[in-house]
Image (cartoon, rainbow, N blue to C red; front, side, top):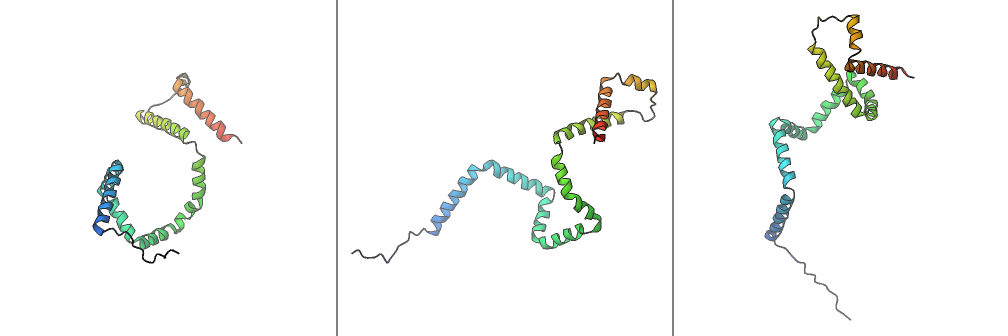
Length: 155
């Protein structure tokens, strides 16, 4: 019968050899992720320039105190309605067609620019309104507003 093994000799790696392996592994990771590391450095630099890094550092070291201030502030009565409506607002945002809202907002901004470029004391007569309906841009806008009102009033 064979003799049982009682003495197991483990392969031991010296501390220096392990450090060299670790350093080589880090070098390979840096080489493979060079772009991400450089972007991370740029991000940290930008956060440091505007003071956000200091704020995040301070917050992380006194998070209990900071969270207490936040909770105390949002517990005030003036924020109660907002906190009650927050879930509904989130669901409403999920229902919005963002592309359409963006297009409408751009058109609204163009209209506001045009309005601001017009003299405040300019008068409009009934004849001017009738003449304006022949302008395709104005006619399109009035038609869109009428369709909006029709859709809004529909039950």
